[in-house]
Every structure is written in structure tokens, then in C-alpha cells.
Image (cartoon, rainbow over all chains, first blue to last red; front, side, top):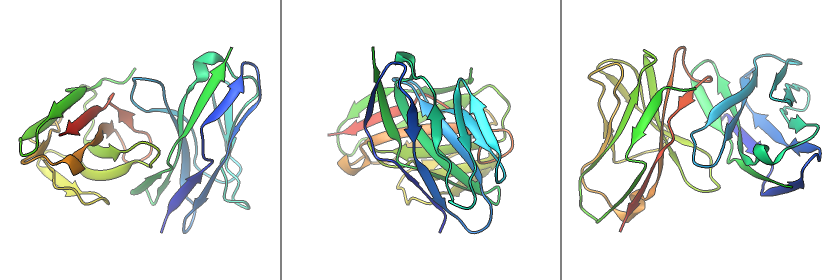
Length: 111
Length: 112
């Protein structure tokens, strides 16, 4: 079935460090891919998305590229801030009907 | 900012009690969802609704029930809570279907 596998956390970085959170997926066909972020005490919110191969989603300095050949959608940011500390969820939607979330990766950024 | 609200945010109750978790949205979305979230685990869909008087069970079997009498309101009820129901419950809505969801802040339930 369709599924998402995320890099296990927690991830701890210093401010201004480069961030990569790995996400790979298993799906029949070509799903749409998403990253959600959950800040402390808040609900999940959509961070970025990509709907077809080679698309790059970007928002708030974060980027992720839909790689069909490696079935991946890794999240990157060139220089993290303390305010980026949160839990990040990778997700896919297949056939506009079946949505699957990864287990989440907790990021802590220290000053 | 998402206009979707969940109450209560936190609830601690004894075994056997009936509880209702409230979820309301002011965006006029037809599609609403309930997810269960345990620490370090992926979100699991337990119920969804594509409109008034429409409810379906999700992938994860749940003893809870839902109703959708009004577009903006999607409450979840447990008739007799048990410790195994301890979890965080997230409500979400969308305009077009799965993918671009708006989430509430969640209701953390603890059953003693």
C-alpha cells in the first residue's frame, strides 16, 4: 500500500546550520507530496507541496523536490533559526483520496 | 490563519465516562476529518465526512462515532472511554479533499 517513511528524530542543530530531513515514499502511480509543520502547542499546518515529478515546493526558506527516480521528497533549509523548532511531517496523497502521513521528525534548533 | 477550533484542548477522565470532542470550522469547508496521533507515530485517519449527513470510517478502527448535522461542526464521541483511548485527536478540514488540510490545535485525552 501507499506509505511514507521519514528520517527518525530528534534532530538537534545549531542556529544557521543546514537542515535536511529525509522522506521517501511508496506508492502505486504518482502521488502528490506534502510537508506539514507542527509548532509547539499548535495544530499542523501545510508548509509546502509538490504535485508532480521534478516539482519543487518552497516556503519560508524551506524547499523540497519531488524525485520520482528515488521516490523521495527531502526537506531542506539552508540556515535554520530557533523559531524553526517544530515537528515536521511528510505526507502523500494518492488518487485524490488516500492520504498518508509519516511519523514526524522533531527538530530542535539551539541558539 | 486556520479558522478551525477544537475543545477541550486537554481532558482527563475516568474509565467508562462518555465524552465528546468538539470541532468547528468557519471556512465553509465540506470535507472534515478526525485523526489520532500518538507520540512518534504517524497520524491515523479515524473518521471523515464529505458533507452534511455524510460520515465514513477511516483506516484505523476506532470505537468512537461522529456526526455531521451542520457543515461547520464535526463532533467525535466516545460512549465509554477506556485507557486505550488515551491519545491526541486532531480535527481537520479541507476545501478540495485530502492534501491541503487545515488542522485544529488538537484535543489531548487521558483516560485513567
